[in-house]
Image 1 (cartoon, rainbow, N blue to C red):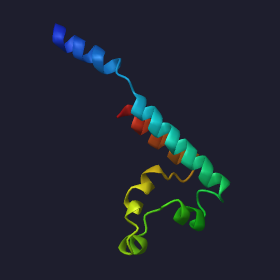
Image 2 (image 1 turned 45 degrees about the horizontal axis):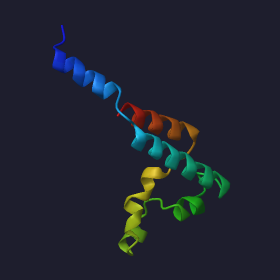
Image 3 (image 1 turned 45 degrees about the vertical axis):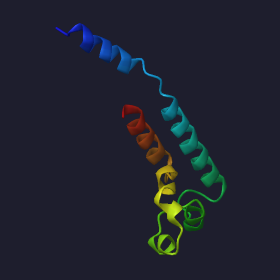
Image 4 (image 1 turned 30 degrees about the vertical axis):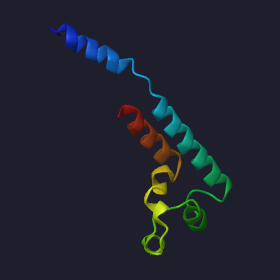
Length: 89
């Protein structure tokens, strides 16, 4: 049997606000749509333009390429499974 404080914790966890998760979903979907419109998510030029991790460019000072790959998804299945993992976490 669960103690009262454990039950309160689980209820608070289950009912928590997930605003940041929804914002990340929106950003991921927006970036995915923009990439599709710009030439496709598998096009090398599009990937470079949207900030794919490239060691040569990072060495030249483009350090934002350490963060931008978080929002790049190659295909709907990739976007779906990453979104699902984000939701679970």
